[in-house]
Amino acid sequence: VLFRFSRIDLRLSPTHPDRAGGLGFVSEPVYATAVVGFALSAGMVTRWRAAAQMARISIRAFAPNFAMLLIAALVLSIGPLLFFSIPAFRARVLAEREHSELVLRYVQRVHAAWFEQRAQPESAIGAFDGSSMADIDSTYQNLLRMRMVPVDVKILVAVTFGIGLPFATAMAAEMPLSELLRAVGHALTETIY
Figure 1 (spheres, rainbow, N blue to C red):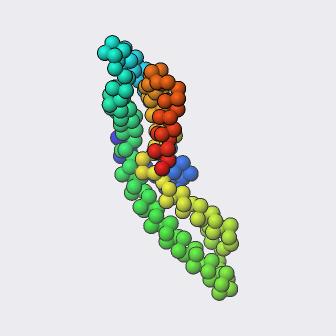
Figure 2: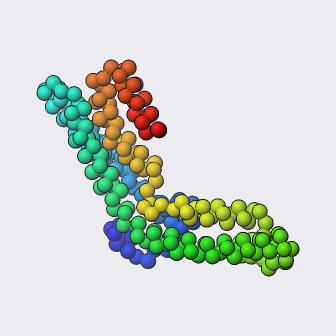
């Protein structure tokens, strides 16, 4: 369905505040993947925990299995949204060219009005003042930040958290609190630096 939807003549707006060309809404159902992923992960982790206890090994031995589960869930939930990357790329390239030309003409008129004291006809953007310059810059910045795939970082975090929580809980159950806090601190330090 998303493939066919992505192939119609979409009138994307690369300056849309959702930074997805107006397609931010198509990624909202992905949040449901976090709930389904949590349930699936909880079932899998329960099986892994039982197997680990029977074999007298750590649940950490199942970390590669968990990684595969997480990757598969992310690919299945976000993968279909990749169909929108080509139309989004085309819309952004076209909009960059159009906005670049518009901004150039506008800035030249501002320069003429401010520094050469030449009267300028009214612009569709507005008066040739600092407020209009800030508005056009804000719009252009939205364009430059447009994502090629309509997925927000919050969605990635939600899916990862939903799937990761059962495994993290199982690991925490077999670790002393001090070791767990040290491992979390180390992981946070590694990601920050």
